[in-house]
Image 1 (spheres, rainbow, N blue to C red):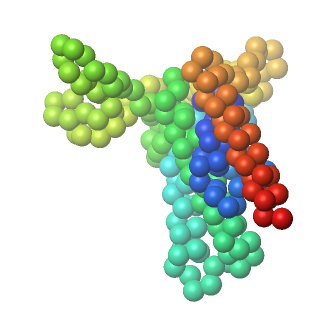
Image 2: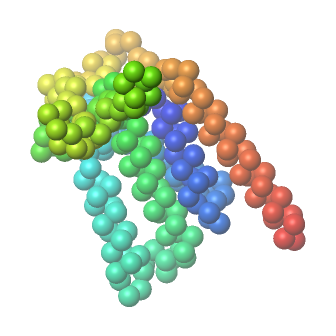
Length: 222
């Protein structure tokens, strides 16, 4: 799974970019919490085999939530969500869903362990691996979009293991298998690389600027 602070940082950046007038501390908290929600499947792995990076990382949760949101906010004559929380509530709900999918599930696709997108229908975990470079000899070289003999023209989702047969370890469940092992060493991963720390710092700086501008605009309005 992606380090905790990285998922939270990506969620915070999405909040700053997409919330618009709904941007405030409570809305940001909701969006960041949505980014961290998929990581809770690590706790479920104590009783459900292979749940880490699978149970809440599968595509079914955002698809179902997105379908319900679209039905309520776009198809129903009177939206229950808007009726209770107004347009602000609908905006926060959509951004939170984007955060869940991009910062929660998407981030895991670029991590070493990958995510089981079709769990429990399929056991395999997938990662997205590729590169984009410009070479003076070969020109532009990219392997994210493959075609021809190398694939079907889509993102190269590569299998890196099985959710049940090759479970992912976590700070909750060090060996990734059902049952609590109190003797196992635990690591709570915040960041694991320099570029990840840059993402976290960028999110902190972006939120600081957004909150500062919001306070300034509020003072001007008054």
